[in-house]
Length: 217
Image 1 (tube, one colour):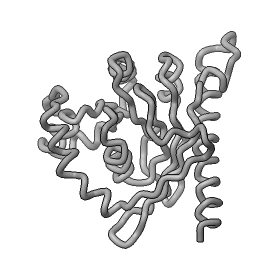
Image 2 (image 1 turned 135 degrees about the vertical axis):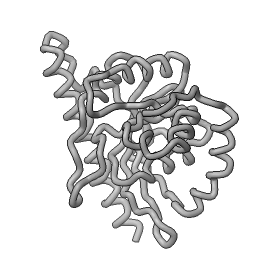
Image 3 (image 1 turned 90 degrees about the horizontal axis):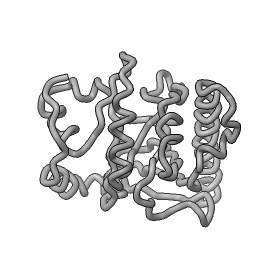
Image 4 (image 1 turned 90 degrees about the vertical axis):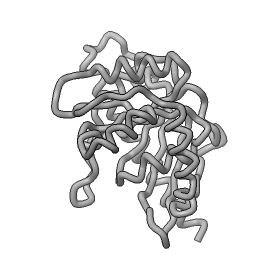
């Protein structure tokens, strides 16, 4: 993995300021499912999104620029080169090794939430192959059930580019314990149910986004 760096406020501020022009390229248009869907995210919270492109993280990071948002990022991104390793750690990204059973990132994310920071997570963990997304992993349910921070589901259409425009649907805050209130179920089964319900909700935001975009044309 290379050297670990602590989050650096100066580096974070510099990256945010110099990266703001990215919003001019992405030109994101945000939709909100209901009146309860937050335009300004609560602090702390867990932002849960589908994952179509490496641009997904910058999209949310810059749109919610005043939110201390720390993303869970796969090991492959930290391994690209020493500079990428430095930047990701310095802006507060949390290292996740998908090839091991090391769940220390859960504890690190919970510590961040306890400090009032927010977490961004792409539960599918990998980019789609041939347009087919990977199913959500249960780590999002494990994390969400161990904190009082609300889960904010979002969906992006991944329409990024100079002559394109990204569209995002924001859903209502979710209390994941209400997705499976039966606490007598085995932990593994309960996490699987919660994960499935979260995935269905995020997918439904994509369906709603298509409807809204169709009406606006």
